[in-house]
Image 1 (cartoon, rainbow, N blue to C red):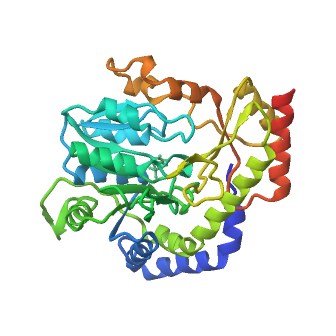
Image 2 (cartoon, rainbow, N blue to C red):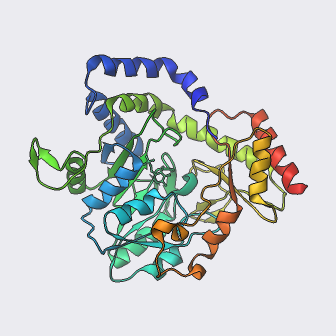
Image 3 (cartoon, rainbow, N blue to C red):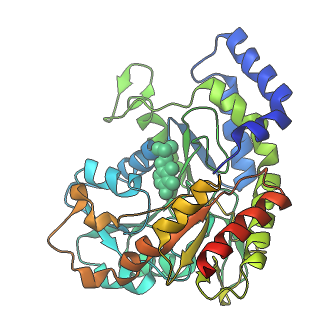
Length: 380
Ligand SMILES: *Cc1c(COP(=O)(O)O)cnc(C)c1O
């Protein structure tokens, strides 16, 4: 699904040298590499504050803690996403409220959010799923109307732009009140272990969160709030510093690979290729910067999706099903408030989606072989 080795080969010298320098310096925790990476990522995103932390799940959790969300507060998020999003809501004693997604973009559905808002709702967590910017204009409007926080889960969307209806353009993760991201190795900006970060333009919130990730300490050994231990290692920061200058190039490589896949699948009735949300409406988006293709995800119809995956596997092609079970149907997150009729889209998507290999090192021959193998199967 990803070719981390191939990517590493291109940046080996820089990465090796900076990692060795960290080891030599012995500044393993909160060293100068972490601070430098923070500043470089702030500049890249055009956001006031980046707070590095240990992983993307912690980033979400601390973002919610920083906002002061309290047990019983309802937090609305999508039924179709990675479990980390709902996990931290539940872990903090908040009440997760799962809602359906849009069949075209796979992102959280605006009408479903609106229907789910109650007087206990405190926050919305949109996910820029598979790398496609969620409809932030509508989400921010709803949030303003109902006085809610917006926490962007940007683990899959780093580097994507969101263009507002008024034409203003911002990177995902810099639009809501706070955002989280992950540097898990397979993410678009991945380190060589675990890593994550929180972004915000709010000075007060940034200060609160910066202490929270370090045991609630603002002055050494003075613990003002209950915090956690969630720090980005200096070695991982060194890897990320070496890779950040290539992120746009990496995302362009993914976008070009996506375009080639989409072109190859044109006219195949059983296959729906990924499209994007654009301010002008739902248009084919593989050439625009609102999608960074963390995953290239097809919907297959009238085809046994699992048999297709098995066939690809036989032909030496990895594939993934993100995600095979709706969150509302997961044992840990079932709730009597949910009705199956609340989730028609997610219930359909979990049966139809299949993600193809997507990374920065895909070449034309590989793409053509993968596309042909998929097409031969769905047509047989
Ligand atoms: C990867 C991911 C996370 C969690 O990130 P970790 O660094 O693995 O903790 C959270 N949300 C989404 C949508 C993700 O894809």
